Image (cartoon, rainbow, N blue to C red):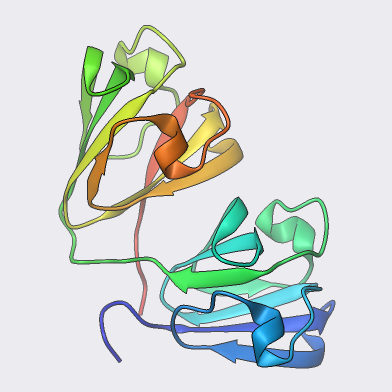
Length: 183
């Protein structure tokens, strides 16, 4: 198993009942594998995953780490729609990122190396993050609300010069945490 793979099982019914789709890597469209887009429970056996409510890695993002999710509310969804998924690209255990108030790495800058439940408590003067640089090995989840709540967006190693590059509808980010991968 490579460092980018894992195993996740999607079930049509609640509490791991009904038809099951096992995935070991990128899956851009559940229907292409004969599985409808209705998912009511998920078991993550290894790895950390980004799941999307539409095919082709589009739409609302959900981060799922090792464990059991017997109903869709457990992964903070409002419905049972799921269309694609992929493992999170984990490279190791070094975490570092820079947040910028403005697009193209302008304005106030803040560096993070650990989880932050409320950016303003660390001196970031706004709730707008318009660009991000992710260094090191780890991936991060950015949340629209404090205390790791609200819409979530996953960023991995790389440069993101605008919030649309992490598929956000707006630049509002108020808390950020590291994704710790458990194989």
